[in-house]
Length: 74
Image 1: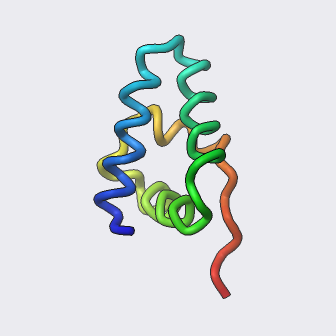
Image 2 (image 1 turned 120 degrees about the vertical axis):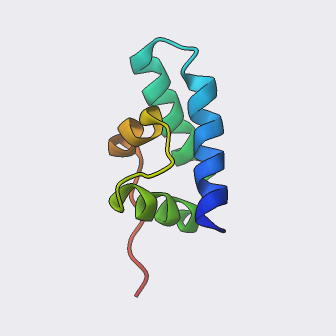
Image 3 (image 1 turned 90 degrees about the vertical axis):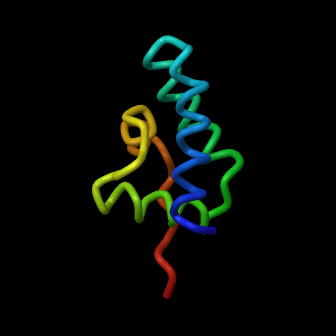
């Protein structure tokens, strides 16, 4: 999946979660990604975050610490 698509998807979730109290929004975004994104999608998300998070909404970047980082590919 492309970085643009991962960014767009993460931002859509973040935009929805921004309507909630801040801590609840961060936790909800992380829970959604943990529950529904497969490891390769989370790997791409973390590649974006690790490169500075360009294009990601601030809530998505903040939620990254609560998202399970998948093992690197061998």
